Length: 337
Image: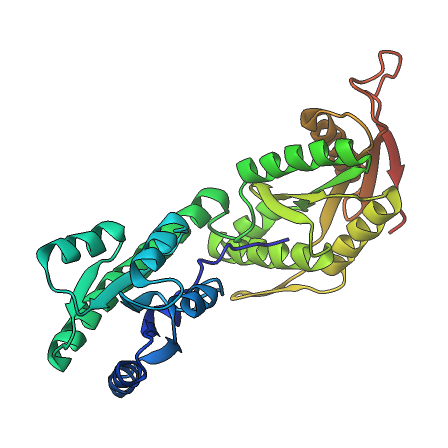
């Protein structure tokens, strides 16, 4: 399955302010001013309620906390937030009637980012909130950049599928899980037939269009929890967990028909594309290289016997290929077109 990890979106949260203030007059003042400046405001009457709100996803990233509140006070709330800090940073503005230097130091050491003394100037409040928003905006951009790099490291640039290395890692994990759960694991190697001819006739840009469309059709043919990767060039690898031989055959045939029944649209026009598919299934302890070898041999047989077809090679859980079997333990079955 094509999977593009999405960064946890703080787009709403970073424009939302949580105000924890037990004094109803100050709470209303904060709320009205922040709303007039265009922020969405969530209010809490004490620290306990604020802590409960913060357990929800994307509640707010900018927090205005009163120091003295019943239940959980602002200092304790700061400590809890920093102790459970996750991927997203929360910017904390601590508000208090205390203005001694030691009080300010105590608040900052507890985890606050900034400090505002009551009674406060409205202009100062706005400036300090804007400073917090600038920090959170920078964080948002860094998260996006990080996730983009993570995606590039694990996915194929052209098709958006899993990269070869990541797909092999996923296959190893599925084989280990299948061994523990005593469930079979299947793979499909899918190769676009005569792809060099497409490149030579229509050019590489149109060839790229064919590969992108191939990725889309394969992805739509598999189950939502299957993994689809670009194995190399015009070859794709599908990893199917908890997959029976019947499942493997049905999914492989569905993928083959997805190409055989409709041409691919390119800038240069339509082109008819078919695929050859080699499958293999393992139940028991099978090394990933052994399963890949079985699927590769099945793919070779599919291309040798005329292309546009599916061949399944089934390895029945041998630790290594049986020495008395010339084909390495592979049972080949050609499915009807």
